[in-house]
Length: 234
Length: 237
Image (cartoon, rainbow over all chains, first blue to last red; front, side):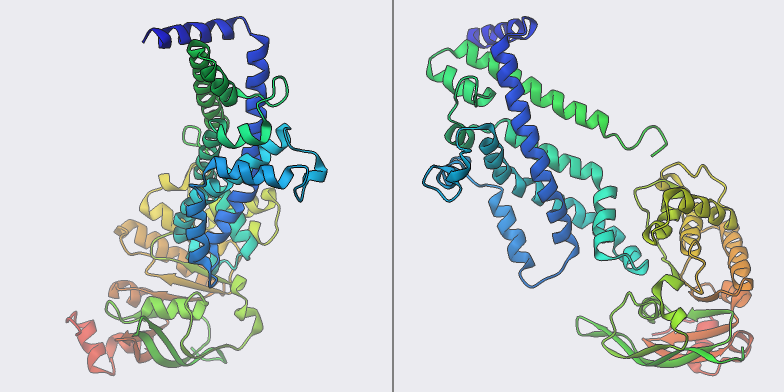
C-alpha cells in the first residue's frame, strides 16, 4: 500500500513538474499508439463492414480466423516483425528495426483484428436493420459499406478505442522491435518494465498511473469530440 | 382499368428452407391506379410485393416489366410495414435516396423538405428519426419512398399499428400520389381501407393468387369460396 501511495505521489510530482523524460516517453507512447490505431482503423473498419455485407464461400472461416487473431500473443507478433525487419530479413533493407515506425507496424498487426472483429459485429447488426432498405434503394456495394460505416460511427469509435486501449498498454512486441532505447523508442509500458526490473517500484507505479490517466483522457476526449447526438439534434 | 399491361408475372415461385411461400403465381397488371393485395396472414402478400420489387429472390418464374423505365429499381419506391429508421435526422433519412443518386447535400435536403411537405410531415426535421411517433415514422418512410418521384410505389401494410387519424392521413396522401400518376401496389388486412382505396384487388391464399378483380366487384361479388369467407371475416385455414 505504501508503494502505491508513493507511486501516486511521484506521479503527481512528475506531472506537475512536467518532467522532460516523462513528457518525452508519454508523447512517444501517444504517437505510436494513436498512429497504430489510425492505420489499424483504416484497415479494420472497412474490413469489418465488408465482411458484414458480403457473402462468399470462405466468409465464416475468415471471421473465425479474425476472431482467433484477436488473441495473437504480442511477443510472437514482436518476434515475427523483428525477423521480417532485421538486417537479414526480407524488409531489413528499410532499416526500420528499433525505430518508432516498426513499433507502429507491430501494434497495427496486433490491434487490426480487434478493430475489424468488433466493427464486424457492430456493422452486422446495423446491416440486419438496413438490409431491405439499401437493397430496395439500389445502393451499390460501396454505398452500402459507406452508409453502414457512417451510421455506425459511434459503435465503430468503440472498436477503435478498444484497439487503442490494447495498443497503449502493449509491452511485449514493442519491447522486442523497439528495443526500449532511451530517447529513441522508450514508451510508458517499456519504461515501466525497466523500472520494475531495477526495483524502482514507486517510479514504475508512477508511470503506470500516468499511463492509466492517459488512456482515460484519450477515451474521454474522443467520446466528447465525436458525440453525434447533441440534445435532440444530430 | 383498361390499358396495356405494364407488368406480367409468369409462374413466379418463392421457396425458403423447403417451404413454398408463394406461387406459382401468374397475372398481369394494366392501367394506372391502386392495386390492393389482400389475404390472410401467410397468404404471400409481402413476399409477392418484395418479389416484384426485386428484393426477394425467385426460385422459379419470370417478372416482366413492359416499360424499361419501370424496371429500374430507382423508379420504384417501397414502404415497409416497419419503417426502416436510419441513424440520422428525419431530413437526412428522407434525403438519403437522392444522396445515393449523387445529388449534393443541399439539393437533396431541399427535395427532402418538399417531400416532407407533400406527406404533411410537420415536425422538426433536424431531430433524430427515432423520436417520431408511429404515424410520423410511417410518413417519413413514405416521404423517403416518394422523394425520387417513383413511377411505381409498393406499400406493405403501411397502416398496420396506426390509429384512425393517422390512417386517414396516409390514405389522403396515397390518393394524391395516385392522382399524380404513380401506380401503387399495396397490401393490407384492413377491408375498410381496401374498399376505400382499391382500383383492383389481388386476393391471395396459401401462396396462390385466388382472385384478380376490379375493386368493387371483389367486395360485392367475390368469385371464390375463400374470397367470400375472407370478406365475412371467417378464419381461413
